[in-house]
Length: 255
Image 1 (cartoon, helix red, strand yellow):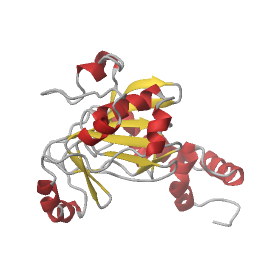
Image 2: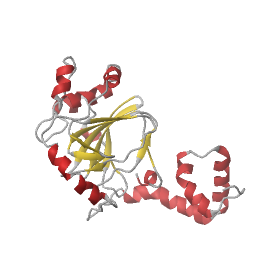
Image 3: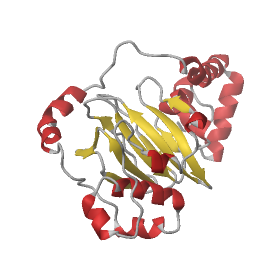
Image 4: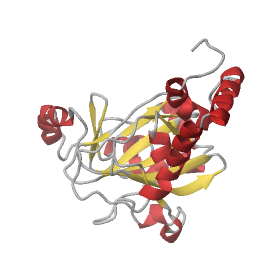
């Protein structure tokens, strides 16, 4: 891609970064020049920009499992059964507890972890636990501290079957609920800031790890991951983040 003018193949490969504003100035100028002279590439970009609206009401009749997922699920079946009824395996680091003392939104997420973890409740006697109730993974006490449910705007993430809604925002930090159906993969993404995810209900695969109810995972800024619903049923995850996710490839446009 050293020529002054980009080819259509070059341009198509750069459209995601162009939309995200991630191209360096010189390459962005060349991209704009190509689009100005190439009606087919402009039309292609316009169609991709229109996809989120076109897909917003689309419901798949048959689930589509990601390639290779069946082997992953079968190989971990024993671990799923072994974790049944156990206390959480993954807990907040000390630094997160310290940060939560100054961050009300993060404190709510850690409180939901406390409601599911006896050992952390015993160690953090002064912290407020938010325990789930039958049929409600959030529980009334936690719901009362979130935005009213009528204001939650659910967004489907392309064709993956997963969906997400922001339930609380304080400054640049947000709490979101993620629903990840069994056998479905959340699109690979990274964040500009830190991210902390707590499984409220169900199970998910996060890389090689099986993450179940009460487990908490923390991700550094820029770290990429793509959790997979392990089932049975949907997995409900409460996510605290310092910035919106940045999806790879066309997933950003589909989301």
